[in-house]
Image 1 (tube, rainbow, N blue to C red):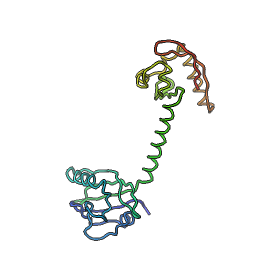
Image 2: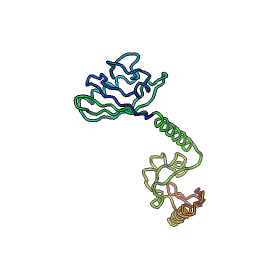
Image 3: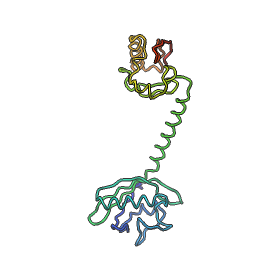
Image 4: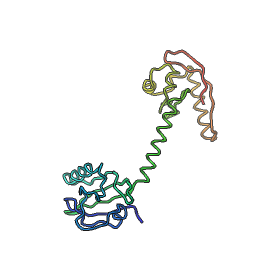
Length: 212
């Protein structure tokens, strides 16, 4: 079935209607006089977020504007599931949509963890790593600490403040040859490009390096 629950509530938080999905999701049977704000053991509001739910509810009542928020709720089997709630006015009552976003949240958390692991790996590599957001202009997207040290800069932030990698080339034509190689790599779908160039440190000292 759809992972969406629909409820209609009074302004004091008491449910007038809860779709069957809500009961299946929470493991709490639908019955009379249930309240979204109830402070009871069988309420499907996670204790650690109950105060936040109340604040959101009263904020919605005060403003009257539609409100969307995400938080964990108690689910059947004693688990916690992430939901996205949307509150909107329905005459004198409140319409509540709940969408189960646990799988999406899990994917986002995995991507974030993977990104953080990648960043940690790159930051601790003994070689300089950088990427360009605009290869034609040489605009830096990011650099790692080793890259900054190789060029004689005190920090990554100092390199990023330069804005462009074009100043690193002793011979500006070398950069044009590198960009041409990147374009050929893109159109030819080659996996790698290797390029030797004479670059300049912060103090303008030249040095040879291989760019891969």
